[in-house]
Image (tube, rainbow, N blue to C red; front, side, top):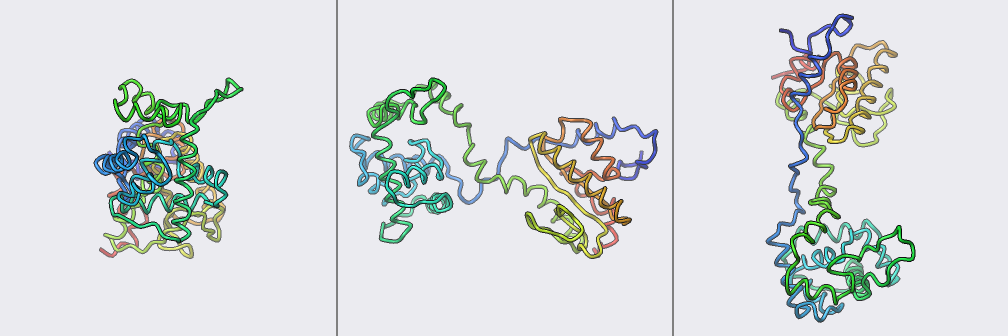
Length: 341
């Protein structure tokens, strides 16, 4: 039986359902696994920061700017633990700091500070007079002031909920102390987790690396075969294309193949990628050229709409590769003309 890459997609009698089933069978969900990345904080490290914070604040009875700073000096990851208590993202903490202290902390600076600490979470550090240290001190000060106030009175609008209206900060430091002493009931822990989504912050931090899984597999195959290729940058403008494809073989001046690559768990994003591939096919027809239009895909997002997969197969003449079939990429496309190994 011929592979889907070799069929005649101009044949009106071609049966697409088995082909769609074939691709769907190869696609696997990847949302359960994520890259660790350099800045991933494991629980053992986080817990050491928590203990340092607990000691410096005398079991959270002396929560001051000075006591939090003392914990951060010994174990910088304490800064991240304190952020977790507040329930803020780095940009949110930066915004609160600017409002409360007048020290300008932009989102980029807050993210950079957060990442640097996660890269060296347990390396003691001193706080000097640099701009970064001034911002860190200001963020701690703003955090302590925010925590002391807590959720305050209920919002006048019943449709609103205060960000600090949670078990460990609702009444400020008074709420935090019994939680630190006694531990959190499991049901409440699960509720807090529901609000925040497990691994949400880490997934956001490594979202680009998650997407690089497919691109990495493509580059490995091309490199192993010594194929010349051009990988475009995000939002790069390439003459002749309103949106540059992810890969051009060998280059935009004499292309024999264009590749769109995508890993997605979301069907809306998958549909957008299908539309981009169709657009590349239209541009090929309008230009009168004969390069291959190729899609390399992964993730459950592409398994939702059968009609979208049919459109993708038609636009690529069946040249739809998954992580399971990317090793077949070169021999089943015009890329083989540039193989030197």
